[in-house]
Amino acid sequence: MFRVTTGASLGLRCGLAVLACTVAVLSLSSTDADARGKRKFFKRNTAATSTMDARYADIVVDANTGDVLHATNADAIRYPASLTKIMTLYLLFEQLEAGRVKLDTQMEVSEHAASQAPTKLGLRPGQTLMVEDAIKALVTKSANDASVVIAEHIAGSEDEFARLMTRKARALRMTRTVYRNANGLPDPGQVTTARDQALLGLAIQDRFPRYYRYFATQSFVYRGVRMSNHNRLLGRVPGVHGIKTGYIRASGFNLVSAVQRGDRRIVAVVLGGASAGSRDAKMRSLIDQKIVLASTTRTAPKIVEVADAAAPKPVLVAAPTPRPEPQARPEKPVRLAAANPPAKAEAPQRKPEARTAERSAKEPEQPVPGSTEPIKPLLVKTFSVKAGNPKTVTALSMLSPEPLAARTALSTDASGSAENARTETESERLPPPPPGARPGVLGVLSAKDMTQPPAQPVVTASVTPMVPTTSSAMTAPAPVKSSAPLSISDRKPRGSGWIIQVGAFEAPDEAREKLADAKSKAGNLLKGAEPYTEVYAKGDKRFYRARFAGLNESAAEQACKELKRSKIACFTTRN
Image (tube, rainbow, N blue to C red; front, side, top):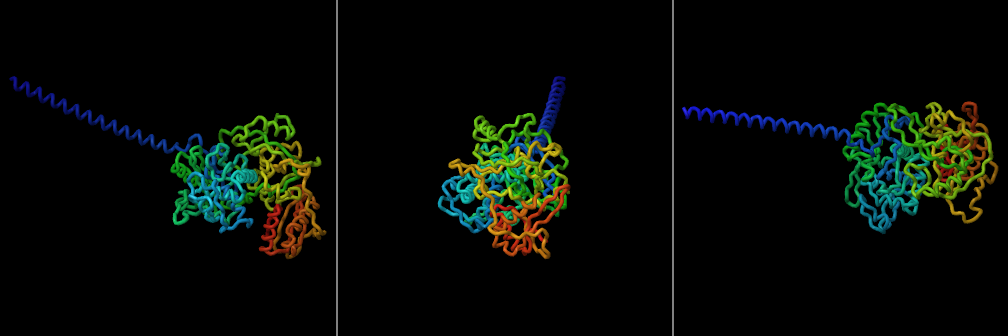
């Protein structure tokens, strides 16, 4: 009896122990599976939101129309990092186009250039760097030392080159961009926006198609060392042909991409990615989703600089304080335009000199991020202007919010006026931002601005920083006049071949003066050309085109380049 009871008791205990172990194993397995599932869910959500931190911004622009297909924080102030090198190359391409440097020109390496932080080529003071090697080094390795070599060769110093960069940004209506160095290394005063970088990405393709191809370079060999392009989308995402990556700790991971698939062309910008991988993934997604919305027909004119547009006589104006950034932007396509920070309507009007003095006394030396003021308060030249009726400013810009038909009609006739001519000294200085820190001088006006009549005829000032050493320094330069009378026809010559247009004006005398000025600047190249004016109507106004006819294509291009070197805007066209 004792044995039977003991055996049964032992069997019961063993059974209970086995059951408990089974329950414990099942519980642990279930807990581990739940934990793995939660980790996977967390990773998925982290990957989906990793790019959307406080630094994130993006924009996608249809390059054929200028429409904004998508935007997130497009006008928020961000750090450009190595996207700065896009503007560095823009200024170098200008030098190449003007013939001041060649691809095989050797540039000297200074101690300052050699001391730049990586990434870099490892240049040493006293060495030389060829221009074409410098271009490829910036595009592929994003070499900081090569950027400074370019800056010093063009401007003499990196600081002066940075001022030229900011000046060029204003000319392209990049109203919220300020440059402080040539390579994008950290500087709290060097800022930009996604919209401004899209403008630059469009402009460098339009202006320099011959040299823009370098942005598609996938690798570069320098002194036996092969360097791969940091842009991992090249050769991997269909249609991507540039243009530049960038990263510093304060900016996050940046990328500007230009894409063409068939006849559709877009420029996309991503700023503030949490990692290179998440930035690239976001860019791929934007490209695939938005390029199908792009137009297959080019309807927008090429982007041109402020200095190339016709403008009335200058009056000095001061820039207002920018308005706060908008909280949200619509997803439907809108016209790409430079950021427009208007002044407060109730603010009293004060003299520009008083406002400049007040700002210099109250504000720090560095501009507030997003400000379009020059880097430092400067003395300026002012020109007195007779009061008169306001003149409509025509433009040549794909950034205008005007109806498409109106913008297309303007694209062939706005190229300059007699009053817009500047001396060579003035053109090398830093000009002010557009009037009221707005790009209205190029016709880029908001809907509100277009419905209100102007209070007074005000346009961008022709401003030259200078040291007031003598009283003669404040005298406006005398207009250039031809030494001999020029016979100008009022009709287009027959069989006129290629044509050079140097302006479109409201008065015939202005057109004739511009023709005489152009003839004096490029007389040898325009020796066989026939100057004439051509009348055309736009709305209820008449305009007079100032043109030279009777040239072949090569002669017309060469003469136009010479006129541009003399600060006379022009373009060529077949008759």
